[in-house]
Image (tube, rainbow, N blue to C red):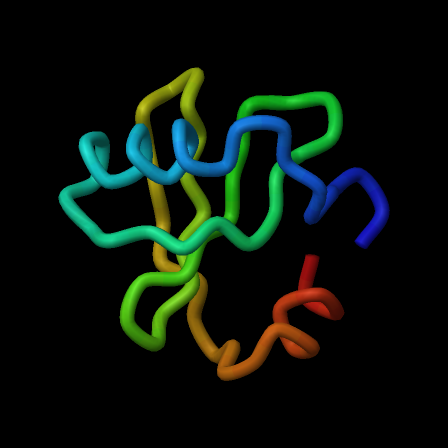
Length: 72
């Protein structure tokens, strides 16, 4: 999606940060190109995490990566 990327410089570092910030096991899906937000998968749920505000949200009604990409 525009404004997001699936190419990560340090994916393990980001996944560890997401785990420690949220308590969830995170599989990194997308990173905001010019921002501080990440989308990750944990179990079967997608989440949006903002590192600047330290707030996160579960993304509802998305069951696949294709649906996620069209929602963003």
